[in-house]
View 1 (cartoon, one colour):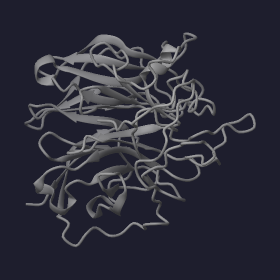
View 2 (cartoon, rainbow, N blue to C red):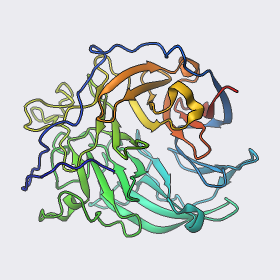
View 3 (cartoon, helix red, strand yellow):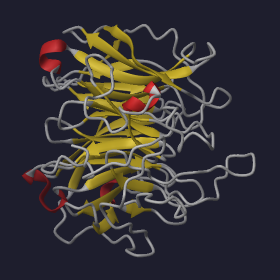
Length: 395
């Protein structure tokens, strides 16, 4: 679950009082080599010939469902057969960083066959132009076709119509069965600190109705747009993961000139991104502006240079040995996967790159732990060269 402060201030701008962890950059704790007792890993190519696959999820029957930013769903069946899942994507708006993005299965998928996507939509903007929407789908039992059943489930998420920059958009479920949505700031300086827009935010909604969750922190504000917001002051939330055992929600976002961040989500928290320059989007300001009272420091920061983190997931299970409990981050400016060991309070214990994934597969968009205990990775190199990888401890 998302950690909640004991009390929240009321008003148009609502600030969290303090951080739940201690920010640590690479200057404070330089990345180390993997621990001496780390398990050797096997890496298998499940599927290749992909173009910017964005997210992947594993169904209870073992089938893998993945999407690609430019459009299209693919299912990899338990016997290894890959097949297209047909779907109506005629209104998809794919420009720059935006397109068909976050994907997650409903916790009750075995019964309802329901899944969710976050994507650019050609006519979803307030002015009739493009916007971003969360859509609910169902897929048939043979994994051949998907049908929209809530279109949109969540609307009103703006996009940068000129470039598609900073469109987010990750989807994950919290421990209470509520749908979390990470959004980007559209590269508009005023958006992150403005509770009247859904850009640059972490949202929490009921997955059945799309309405704000009943315990969201801003329900008393008069502007209904703010009711879905859990946290604000974000630049481009592309990673969400729930920590096994604690239920704590972590988010990851790419930095500007310095400081990619991992944050521990707190209801009502302001994470300090405020790039309002002199009439322009000022990317020289800190990711967490120390001048903002109560701004919550990141539990991990990259320092300079940034590595452009993306999706995140926790490893969980005895089969991972010394890797059990690690938070894994996809790396896009460099290559591979960064591992963080976090304490229960979010403080950093250690960090290192996963050796078998370093310098071999290129940019990684999304690491995701499957229901079978294996780690699945989507690469993000483009031009039809991308892959879906399966990573397991060597037997």
